[in-house]
Length: 385
Image 1 (cartoon, rainbow, N blue to C red):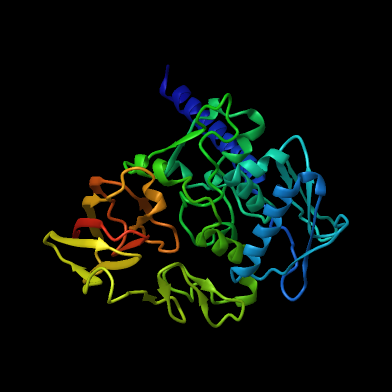
Image 2: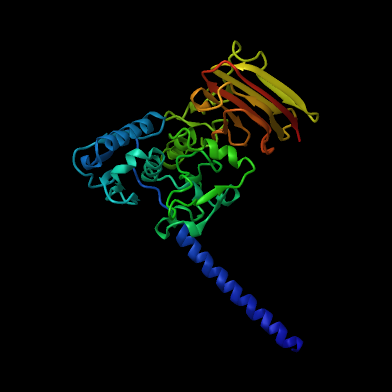
């Protein structure tokens, strides 16, 4: 083949590739479009209707969950009506399948279809409540492949939409990282064929996440924060980065709603109890590795480990000892906030553990204990890297 023909062939291949890329880009844009349901915010009520055919238990769960959303400093005021909502609002119906038809118009309501049996699967119930409010499935985030591996062949074709990555606008992501404990991370068998796993965690901490991810099924702080960004942030323009440690503005746009263990007008302070756990609550990491032990942790303990030079902190649990080996979640758990986004729930641990190394992702690591046992002991090491 002469040089001229080779050059022509290469040019044609490049042109075809560019055409393919353009087509892929257009398809991608169609797939990634997502609209926010135009729900009314305070002082206007958000009307909803719940069919009695859903059964007493599921009706109660729906009403209670909407009340919780009302109370968590977001800008909704839910109001039930006895007949179906005709314009913007939410209607809950009994069905043979679980699905949500999200409204994109003020002239039409969101329609939520639920099996009566959903009352017995609380984590999945919360997932569909989240969808009805406009939250997105966690695995559809375009960074999810860094945290989970999806087994597409194990997923029913009708449920692939809950696993396919998309590029969402910033309001959906809410300036937050991938959240293992979000109600929008569906259980591993959700939507799969014959109960097979739809995904698995990638991190070397995967086995610890698997043990804890379904322990406490409820809307987490980060889920409420995302609702605020999605529906309420326009009320507090220029204040989306006002709050510290992953907090978000309250409805008055002056004070902040803070993650657990944080307080202050801007969530700038960490809650310490000088009478419990230890007389040390702040540890400074340096280039040399240090070790610290906490004995007989009580109902509430918090520790901050940070570097003086804003370098990343390397944190390792050397020994975690619980007196109760089975059902340890009933007496309390340890939370390690090692990621940069402190609004996320940290890795939750309980039971006897040794030699757990955490990736160095932040200049601050926060160690929290919540429980009802006085004999939990922890030894850890830390240094800046």
